[in-house]
Length: 335
Image: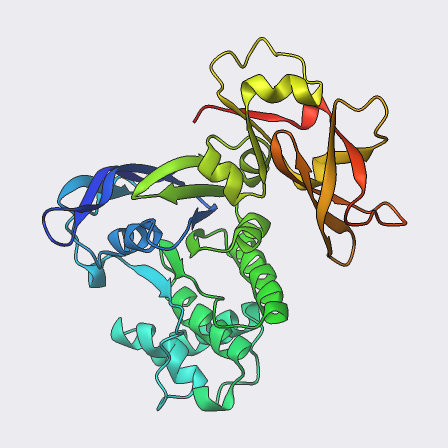
């Protein structure tokens, strides 16, 4: 169900160069939608447009049937969680979380109950009297999340909320965010540059480049069927070749790829095979140990091919090897 709509959004900071250009995006009720892409692609600007922190020079933003395009930020009734947490250092955890309720003149008995419930949902019971400097990074992030959720926002916006946490805590927190989102049934827009983080928790992902959305779909579809070369590289494809070189891998032409100019394959989908009878052979130039497998860079007549293999014993630098690719593991792209 369509809940929010960005239509033909243009944003420019200098009235000359567009940061966002004719951007269109749907937000569904109760979903976790992520904006993913490299630095400078426009994902944070898009989030700030939704929040009301950035003015557009064209286009409209509606939410739940209401035109929000020119509604000031303090009247949008959205929750926001920032990369820096933005907690008030002089306020206790309880008062940090209750801050938005006090601004809305909620009765103290009511907001005390709501703060208690949201602290339980966010897993920070017992921290009410502590101050931010007494909390770990994960606890601060949960307090920031609780503060944004306690006002019961129509939409929760998260801007790189896990980037200041170590790797293990990031994994824990992204699981917590997904659990909370599902438990509350709230719509969330989540900005990140981390593909693994994004794909693990999102219902849909919008991948951005140069102020435009290149593909918006569920993570499984984007991972298996990237819409363009940029997205394919972003989601782990490393081997790209002109379509006409497919015969060197023993690939048969497919009837539905007449317009394709490239084909690509992931390293884990290139198989080592015996030299005799192989469609393509090459020499191993680099071997890297990755823990659960070895990655090889193999020089072939088509150029360098990257593959990963768990075969034991490992092949050695200088070995001549055969390479094989299954037709079903190849993705065809138009440049």
